[in-house]
Length: 373
Ligand code: IPM
Ligand code: MG
Image (cartoon, rainbow, N blue to C red; front, side, top):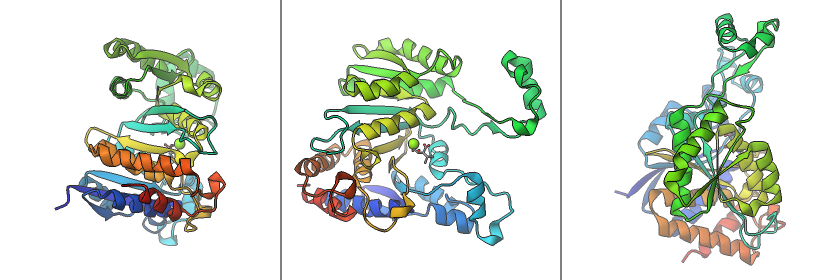
């Protein structure tokens, strides 16, 4: 029996292309694994009314980790219109499968390294090496939302928050509320994950990216907990920056930062910005990590217009497989992939279109594979 069982969910769009590329590289490092392919994505939404079928959830439960490509998602109304006729008007609501997986498996860390590889013509500046820890299960992604807002909810809010009173005359169907739910546990575990990482990797600082001057209760709680636990991790320093200022500082002085930690939505936004500093989403990988399971994916979406053309840069997916190996404890194999990617980029002979080249998705994967021992 193989040492690991890995669920492979290519999804749709370019998810399929980049997964094929990553598997070329994984085969080359020779991980002792059984790869089990599963269904996820737009096709299953259209034909079964669920982009994340139950059988896929069962598959994940029986595996050690999951590699996930990308899937198309659309706003509520458009999604409902694309259902096969038999499934229409049944009140089915499209919900992002990756967000569901993160919550269902309690994958509370979204680890997003943003490293500028030497020789990448797309680097905003060279030598950027940031790691983002994004809280991955709560905040504005908690799914606690109202539209229209039920009367009981309104009344309860008015009774407890003077600020709610100013909306008294707004009709229920003209009001929408999305709750930003934070828990002490949720804040503490993402902060500790960031600090542990910083200490282990001898990083100077952890920057907590929130907005406590305005969002007093949720951001306030995150910063308060950060201050409380930070001394345990000395000499790692705690820095505090408001999210708007962070966007500016990341463009101005990206080298000043080591590890950033943020709640779900702020982490989402900051991580796209940071990805662009190091070449764009084609280079940005993510690990959705919990205490006993991990789902590893590129940060980019499914780019349907490039689907099946083997055109897009598979580096993000290849680096996601490297994050998986690292998390599984296969450090040597993980480093072999990282070094091979770095070498291929530094050489600059094999480049996909985003880097100004003509190589295909699989050309790049083969080049990386050839650089592995
Ligand atoms: C990401 C993506 C997802 C998110 C989408 C696809 C739901 O933007 O992983 O950053 O918002 O988390
Ligand atoms: Mg995002």
